[in-house]
Picture 1: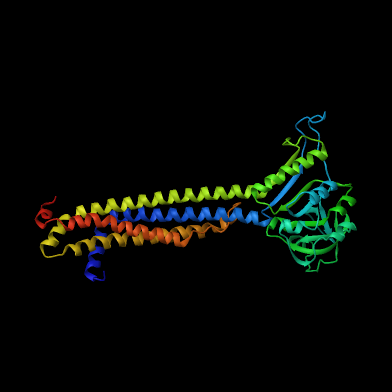
Picture 2 (picture 1 turned 180 degrees about the vertical axis):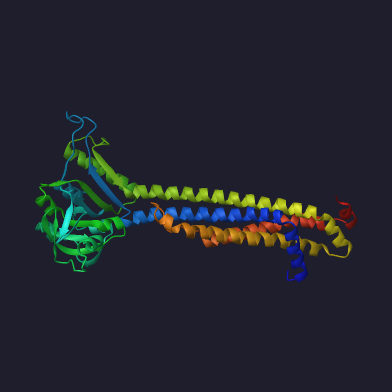
Length: 409
């Protein structure tokens, strides 16, 4: 192993056969490189999608009104379904398994918000207090909407950190200040942040206030709640909800267009199954690439032994032991696969790091990184495989009688 003469001889052999060595090394390096890139991008995609779901509650269910597409009790198709505060109360009181619930009323107007001379257009979200839990928003200062605000129709607002940056540019504390939403003054009672950067541009106001000041009556446009049920139980809950809404709004419970339901738990499960498929695909591609590398190393080592048969005969004729001949060829194989595997590993990691700023701008892609231990095991597998690939022909060559080896053409 630490025989200097042996290593000098290996280096000399490699120098004499640079093209052959380069091709062998390339097949190994390419296998590791592709495995690292595939594992990294697959991991980045999975992290990106999981982060998107974690921005809001992953177990939330939203219900939107639609238009009937089936006749029912003499009523024609195309009838609009309108949600009211009564729907919120009924769902909140009757449906079991609801954790947090909030309804929304979409305000009319442009959404222009101003403070002194500063103004901008932001998303106005009128909701109930539990919307903070559903959106995973956390308070930076002050408080969120509470039940008293709903009951007393208070004109208060909880604003996102992006709005503080846009309207309060002189580092003025926004708490207790009055901003104007579509020309109507609202007192700021809290500042929140949100895992989703886009949601930091929101202004939350009490739904009862929004219905009153924007002439919404008792209309609501959306119901959202989080569920304590698993995927199968949540589907049963949705079926119960449809029957309940169908009864109160007089439409066929089988009418798929009368209500629209968005079950994030079901969607998240679908993505998890997709991730499992992607991981399997990556491993199939990666293992296939590594096998191709192993076959390449094996073929090259067989050629090496064939080319050096006469040399081996001379070595045996002057007293070299079979073990020294085998170790010489094995060390050359291990050296090539080790160096090439390391190069592939470094290039793969380097490419992922280089493209990280680009990946950050791609939707559903976050922090692409390969599992280092997997890459290390793959490199070791290639080294061992390369050694085994070199051992078979080397062992065969070591058993050849010198006189026969010297006659080899």
